Structure formats: structure tokens, C-alpha cells
Image (tube, rainbow, N blue to C red; front, top):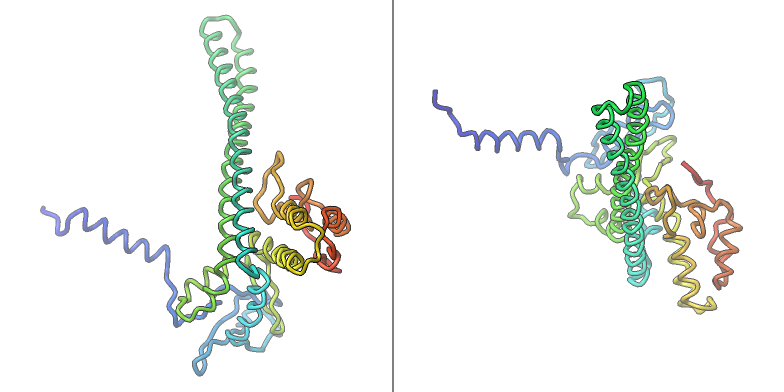
Length: 324
């Protein structure tokens, strides 16, 4: 029988339905934090209810829990707004410096990947040639089946190992690109976009997802875990802003030397085990992937001519992951 609708129209409608199911859009009448916050006591998801034009979050207490207080959405936002100021460049000069550093870092990353990919592909080609050689030797009866099987397993294991290296290198590259874009976008756009009255609830939720891996609310206090990009900015943007402020006040021996010091700390080079930005950085990043001691950081800055560097290092720095 003749179809009621064309195949083209069917595919078009099906595509729209699938997109709506897989990527639901949040109405402006929904709470920004819906589904994002867990109770810090029982682990349940914070429920939201609207009263007199305002959203209030509370623990639904499906499990035994003593949390009974409500928190207004605006009050919760007030807890995170100070974070936006900490990651924002003080002026265009700081932002431009960050942009240039990210570009330089990208060049280093690309060169490293090209070098490693060339080495891995050459090794892979050698293994493939060896597999082909033992296959021909076996067909020509130059080697026994036992010897063939032994070498086949040996070469196949090496081949699999090299292919894993290539995949990991590609995955790491994607992560680094993603983190670099996130760092720039958060530093430049997060605050103004979130506070813009025209910004949709969905966009605000996206911004929160770029900042926080998770939230926990207990006794009206918010505990958070940051994304690697935001963790990078929250640790280093205040330091970068302060360093440029020292330049402007004439408190450094040499502008070039001190900026190079911070650049080296912020965006050091690659090693044999590249990891996404944010996971690679501990309290400092100068001659190796991580340096745990704030004393080393202070010594490094002062050796590069940054006077007053002790004022830039927190007295009680937060412990960081030095290795993964």
C-alpha cells in the first residue's frame, strides 16, 4: 500500500522527537539547582518547591535525617557568587595573558602529540611487518606451528599495548582541549552570563555543570567538588591577578621575569604522561608536573624576582592530588 507519509518526513519527525527525549530543555519556571544537590547527611536529593514566587530547597528525608531547614534558591546562589569573582580576570591584560598562555600550551601539546604519535605508529608498523613475516614463514613451512603461535601471541600483545597508547594519547588530547576551552569560557563568561537576567535556566545549569562536579547541602552550608577547569582557576586566577597588581604597583624587580615565573607555574610543559589541566597542577608547576611544598613555590617566585611573593601563597594551602 502507498505510505501515508514520506520517509523523509518520518525521519525528520523522528529526529525531533529523539532530540527532545535525549536533550530535555528546562523551563524558566524550574529551579536552577533541580537534581544537582544532595543532602550532606542522608545523601538524598534536595527537593524544590515554589512558595510565593520563590524556590525553596529541602531534604525530602526519605531516609532517617535530621535536616529540616529550607533554603531559598537566591540564598544558595549568594553562596556561589563569590566564586565567580575569584576566577574572573581583574582586567583585559590578565585575560589576554591567560589567552596567550593557553595558546602557547596548545602548541606544546600538539607538538608532543605529533612526536608521540609518530613514534607509536612506527612501532605499530614494525609489529605488523613481524606478524606478516611469521605468517609467511609458517605458510612456507620455515617455522613450526608451536613457534608461530608463541611469536604471534608475543607480537599481538605488543600490538595491543601500542594501540592502547595511541587511544590514550587521543583521549588525553580531547580532554586537554575541553579543559582549555572550559578554563577560558569560565574565566571570561561565567559571571556575566549567570547574572544576566536574560540567561535561561538551562544555560545557568550548564554553567553550574562547568563549575561543580557535585553539591552537598547540610545545615544550610554548601560543600562542593569542583571540575578540573574550575579548580585550576580558583587556585591560580587570584595568584595571577595579584601578580599583575604587583607589577602595576612597581613591587617587582622585573616585569618580564616575574610574569615568566607565573607562566611557568601555571602552564608548564609536557612530560611522558600528559594529563588534563587541573589534575596536573598541585601547589605549583615549575620544573615538574607537581610540586607539593608551598615553600618551594615561594622560593621559586622569589628566585625569579617576584618581591612580596610570600603574600601570594596561602598560609594554610589546601592539600592537592599530586599524582593519579
